[in-house]
Image (cartoon, rainbow, N blue to C red; front, top):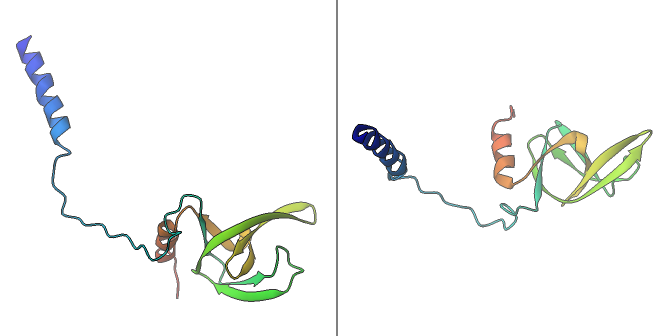
Length: 122
């Protein structure tokens, strides 16, 4: 009986003290962008080689600029429109509206930047 109790206490102590190992890593957060870790802010990474931004959600609106594959932009708005018989989602970025077909959405800027680093950009 004492052997079983001693074994259980030994394994429990290993479990508790295993997390007490010192880690020499220092994490530094870039605080230059206040939205980088905001849980309500989404980030778009452009996945098309070339994408056009527009003045409003829809292909009939005039262009305001363009994006290239790997561009990371903060999403400031979202709108669903009807294109033919289908619904299409558009995102409002700081430079204009872009279709959801041209981007991938991430929950924070760090994830978006990691996705860009893993893209095959030439």
